[in-house]
Length: 402
Length: 86
Image (tube, rainbow over all chains, first blue to last red; front, side):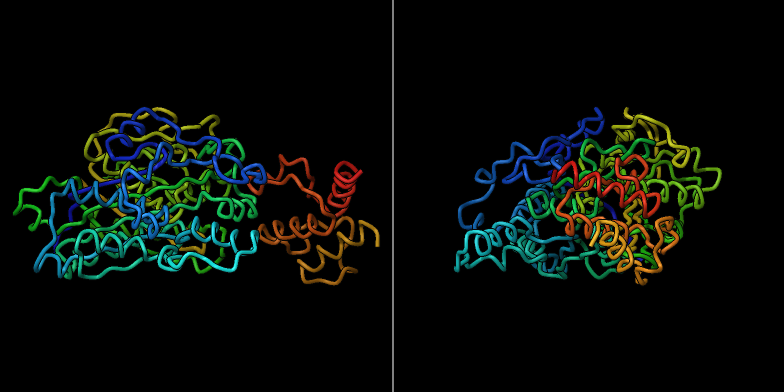
């Protein structure tokens, strides 16, 4: 089997519009959550979120592109340009024919849906823009990445709610690992911070109205974010032959299904995914230094996740670090695993552990080292990234130092 | 129909029971209402009475809306109707 390394990373999220800025913000423990700015925000019960700010689409895309690109597609392309630029790859000939793109996304073009529903239902218009369908389809982002970078191999989108990106990256890993493709572009994006998107989440009554405080005893729910994370997964020998800078090695992954409840998480499902990833990567549990938690800041997730970590790691659970970066960049839904993989890369490559900000009170049911509020310097050789989705779908990725 | 009977009907429907099976002392757990059914019941009560119920599923105990048994839910709904519709 082929070894798989990451040779490029890109992002745009509430913390920054690139990886460098995101690392700096994570190091500083900055919080990207603030008052939502959107039409009809006064009709929302939840009025906070981690929005991408200072974003000027007209500086990045031309008029024709803007007519075709929903915000989630734009975010994906911004991140893909950064990642592929860093990798220094150009796709032509055999490389183009065999390389592809697998991205995670949950809601598709929610802004496009929202705007057009308003126009036909609220404003009573009987005509919509001709590009509504190609703009809102979930695979639009993957397709536009394939077009912009000439990727002619496998290209598709994976939707598994909040685990979409991790499932997508697991697929991409498998393709390179199995020798099916030399390079796969992967990660995910989401842009659900529109009136309808927030209103839908509000209905479930799991959103916080004031802050995201993962693992803190006074946590009161999740806060939604938006953004994208895109990575270049490359076959090790291919990367070595061209002298590419390797950010980390993708060591393995596992996916499990709780087969139990549509919204409530299961300790067993989460634990099987973590132990499965370690087994797939042939890594001893004692070697794991950092886990980027799913850590949504809901009552249900955080205690279940901590119990699962305790089960899988035994005594080592008290030695490893576990943080949730969602308190900084918000819960980016289908894109969240991709944005969060950055924290794992930062831990491995820069020796800096991103903190769990917003932490105020210890919770005996989350009694692990959650790296509260301040980033920490530590040498880490192996990191896991957890994603546990609604629907009981779990996906865990293991990264290690190259 | 009284507020009490309307609330009981909603809870009975969620629990897939007859209204006569629901007593004022029943807890939601007694009648088999889980977290998802609870959120749905609260939504149904809001729609029925056109009120807004302060309830966060992450901290049900801290909510001003007491869900410890059917009697407390009925009392809470009556208070909210008085506050919001009075």
